[in-house]
Image (cartoon, rainbow, N blue to C red):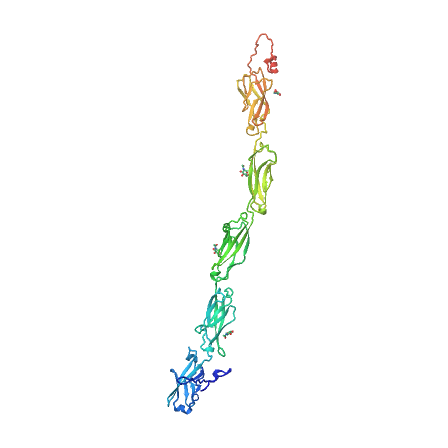
Length: 587
Ligand SMILES: *[C@@H]1O[C@H](CO)[C@@H](O)[C@H](O)[C@H]1NC(C)=O
Ligand SMILES: *[C@@H]1O[C@H](CO)[C@@H](O)[C@H](O)[C@H]1NC(C)=O
Ligand SMILES: *[C@@H]1O[C@H](CO)[C@@H](O)[C@H](O)[C@H]1NC(C)=O
Ligand SMILES: *[C@@H]1O[C@H](CO)[C@@H](O)[C@H](O)[C@H]1NC(C)=O
């Protein structure tokens, strides 16, 4: 029995030929020679000294025609009958001979004749680390969603090492990188697997692609290794919310800004890829009015004027704009538009009260009208002043809160100016001054302040004596500067106390003068009557005028003596005035 000798220490297996003689005490009593030979030995390498191991003298080998027969078709060994040494005919490649199995044992038999003897032998072909781990592909491409959570595992292709046991694949390692670590283990089928384990969240926007060096190492001495590149393509996930450049956009805009004028351009950035990074804009919170006044371009984020801005209507507009990316993530920003006042409003004059007519005797400072002036602009643009055009007997008195009173400031006279068209001009203080005008039409109502006036200084009318009755001898006209009934004149004779009423009458309405009865020049040559013109005002005013009616003599009397004897008798009653009487008397 030979005990096998195993090398101790660092001595290399392949340099030392070892053999194991293992004698099994089988129950049958048959014995098996067991040897071991590292693979890849040169041809004709020594395997064993059979003669020695079997204790057969060398001389017997040839005599008994000892020979070796390998199992299978190929004869791998050769037995030298002279030396008793068993050698391998060829270099043995374990990976070729037993590609699948863990142990690689070649069985041979040694035949002796005379007597016939059969001895079984085994040569274990020992693995040496002659193969490196090899990855099926030099590059592996892995697509990983950037949202993959840490701890996620991604199986990698295993490397293959044809060597066995310790010389086989032992370990994987990964080049230094911040995101992944390796997890490896042995599956139920004994196959080593390797996985990438995500340690730190990926971010496509930070790094879209990573290249890792994966190394597979075997346990040989020295170890051999194989590498592969693992290219990680980080797949975009809509993991970025659009972000506005600013939280609030503040814009100042003149109210007369034209349509289409750019107000502001809001912009939200989204570093995601493709539609995940495409941002659309829309108003999120905006009043109906703001939506009418401003138009938002949903692709560019431009806000333009779309309506007539009016400072007086709204001094500012606040809108919330929402940016949404293709994946539905959104962000908001505020747009604050301050509308700047432009002097675009003329003052407005609003008449509050108006006395359409005032009496001409109204005392100065009588209020004629009350009105207010309003300017919808603000500041100086809305400050107003007010004036009256022309030189009129009126003035403006500011009262309160932009109210003005239009008052008279002099005595009025309807007979001189019966109506005034007063133009009030209100002007604001804007740089380009705007003004507006309003007319107040004031009628001066009549007061009976003018008595009738006769048109002539002196009235003298003549009538030929013996006139026909009701003879119109003329007319006396009086005018009245007043109006209406204040100017309606009535004529009348003024009764003179104690005087005989002359034969004269006057038409009350038109002033025509009539002689009622035929007159006799020889009786009265001249009448002196007083006429009064009187208006219908209240109180009425009147004027009196003297009318002299002269009689013209007609030769209607032949000189006759009415009696032979003249007795001069005169009574007082025959005469109305001394003069005719005396003239009578003188005849
Ligand atoms: C595998 O390799 C890594 C790094 O090279 C090492 O830290 C680890 O101990 C090895 N594991 C084994 C089982 O050899
Ligand atoms: C938005 O702007 C783009 C580019 O200027 C333009 O082509 C498009 O017509 C605009 N859309 C609207 C609704 O104005
Ligand atoms: C008053 O004057 C204004 C302008 O001068 C004119 O438009 C208006 O018709 C006038 N009013 C009257 C009642 O005459
Ligand atoms: C007419 O009578 C008045 C008084 O009654 C007198 O003042 C006036 O002088 C007279 N006129 C004439 C022309 O006689």
